[in-house]
Image (cartoon, rainbow, N blue to C red; front, top):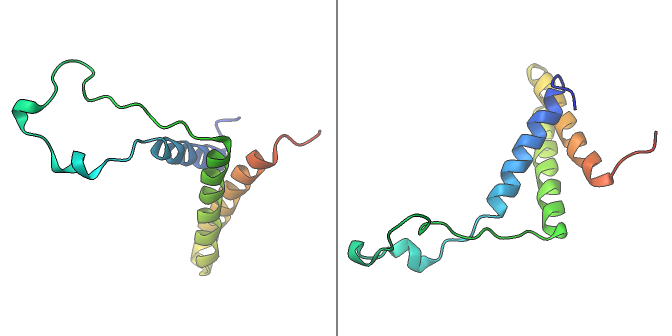
Length: 106
């Protein structure tokens, strides 16, 4: 990918962040209440939690959702002053949808 393809870079960065968020372990209600300081674990790595592993279907769903959000936002930008932004959002969505379609024959 060329560094000049700003739409692709932007779409991929945001989608990687969305995938990273989807892998986060949900915080339980018990963890939100907290534990007394003297009962807290100590030492290196005690606050680490294993990440969720997304299935292929979940990854596809996240990528589709990211593309859908861009298309929805572009559809709402109807003023002529926002035409460039809407075109960029459509280009980003196109990048994500092409990823889901797989490589195209040359």
